[in-house]
Image (cartoon, rainbow, N blue to C red; front, side):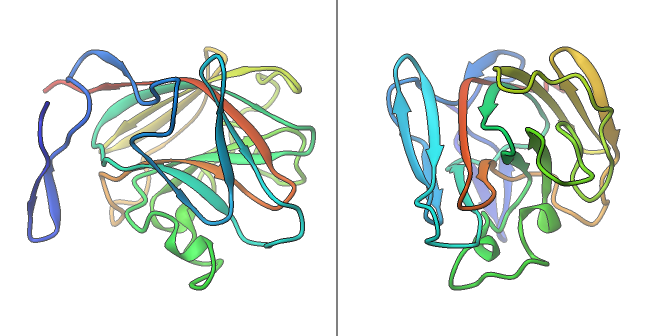
Amino acid sequence: MIKPLVVGGAILLLAGVAAGQWKPLFNGRNLDGWESIGDGKWSVMQPGIIVGDRVPKTSQHQAWLYTRENFGEYDLKLEYWTRLGGNSGISIRDQTRARYAVSPDWDPKRTPSHNGYEIQISNGYADKYPTGSVYLFAEAKSGFDKPGDWNLLEISSRNEMIRVKVNGTLVCEHPGDPERPKIGPIGLQLHDPNSIAMFRNIEMRQVTK
């Protein structure tokens, strides 16, 4: 396994998966390798499903589940399900690890979508960014997700381009902000106290150079 090398706060080599090979980020049994940020209730339902839930009316802030490792350029694929009206997302390159999305440091202008990037997941949530959007940057083409069912989300994170597919169709791409980080963890979001989301078959393939 490649170990991370930290120099002056920068991670130069990234750990976790072999370059060019698809590897699971979730072992299907427990949440080893992940950390919960906020008041989300995360559990593993067999076979191999991460379930994220909230205690209603306890907080108006977000909750997240982050990988403990950071990653650079890669392809990520996973399947998700969320309830009708649900709002979730996948965070990439957020080096704050959602610090400002939860109490006591809550700041709506410094949440993960303002530091790294959030790839939107929505099931009819009242928002102009449909599933697959690079939130705040680019709206995805809509109509390719299956409400109330499992959906496949694929994210290609490159230094100069982010591309998103929903159920095999390219729905969004954007070069991002050149001032934002190129590396960071991967996060699963519960947007609000009404959030319920499930994730399975989470795999990554790092880019070979």
